[in-house]
Amino acid sequence: MRTLLKNIAHLYTPDTKGQFGQIIDLENVHLLLEDGQIKTIVQSTELLPEAEKIIDLSGKCLLPGFIDPHTHPVFWKTREDEFIMRVQGKSYEEITAAGGGIRNSVRKFRQASKEEIKEVTRQRIARFLEFGVTTIEAKSGYGLSTADEIKSLEIINELNQEQPLEMVPTFLGAHELPDEYQQNRQAYIDLVCREMIPLVAERKLAHYCDVFCEKGVFTVDESRKILKTAMEYGLKARIHADELAAFGGAELAAEIGAVTADHLVMASDRGIEAMAQAGVIPVLLPGTTFFLGKDQYARARKMIEAGCQVAISTDFNPGSSTTQNLQLIWTIAALKLKMLPGELLWASTYVPALSLDLADKLGSIEVGKQADLVALDIPNLNYLPYHYGVNHTFLTIKKGEVVYRAAH
Ligand code: NIG
Ligand code: FE
Image (cartoon, rainbow, N blue to C red):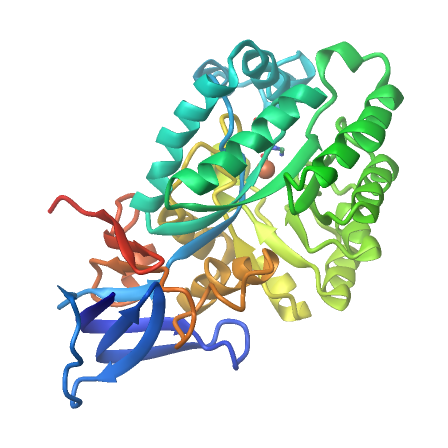
């Protein structure tokens, strides 16, 4: 089966042979897809190749499908009441300390059946495709018991087979200390290390293990123990680090060889240097800083200058960031992280692919790669972060198939 995408106004892709932020811009080209892969880039002067299906992309820009490398999509009820409490002056940390936040989501999650949660998750992840996102990293973390964490990871793995969005599962049993272990943190860490991680690894339910390493949640020593245990079982490490306080999470990521360190709003100079040295990928979540109403954003420029390849993400979750619109994150990252369009393109395609071990088949438009693409109704790349808050997607293609088309 061949599909021809013809008259593409601009084809933009990270130049994967170049530096972070360096992109290729091909004007007025056609792209031939065959059997779910990118077959040929055809210049406008060449003869149009034969194809069973032809899609006209006149006036549109074609990009690699976006990859969101940090999401928490498997939850039951939403938390708009906490949002209003924040509007009235309570902080996220205060709400958490009073038993809200993640623990609120956990209580709700445990009341619903696997099938119920699977259905709402199925509906909500369809929205990623609407925004041109073709792959996500998806974390568990609202179960926090062995059975409920398995339930969460099973939902991700089953939905991965049943609908077009590709999901890479991450085990986040150390997202918070659940209610029943508040007075006994060591017992919960033991449960994560001795029961949950071995079971997740044995059943191959996740590729990665993550920990919320943060003041008031898991300490650096506890996070090290959990992530090292996971690595012994063959899971790779990602880490929620230095979001609300400078806590040593970035340094820990470098020390243990985590693939990513995420958030990093308060990361120290030393932590940034260590990440650059160790090749840890910073995953920056400026939508979360915005949605928590905070003023201090991650120091992306410093990380890039230190030599890091940076990724951006929505952090989609029911508490600290409810958007699935990675295009909106481009705008916030441009304004608050001072990232430029070429860097944002890398940060939302190729670098996330690297962080998920998928860069050999995803993250750029190159012959032989999987045909995961997004056509945007924009005149050029600078326009994407500029015209903000709307969805620019014209169509989304996953493995060569159109999986979303705008109504107009
Ligand atoms: O990445 N930081 C930890 N986890 C999420 C918040 C989850 C929640 O509030 O439900 C985050 O911001
Ligand atoms: Fe998160």
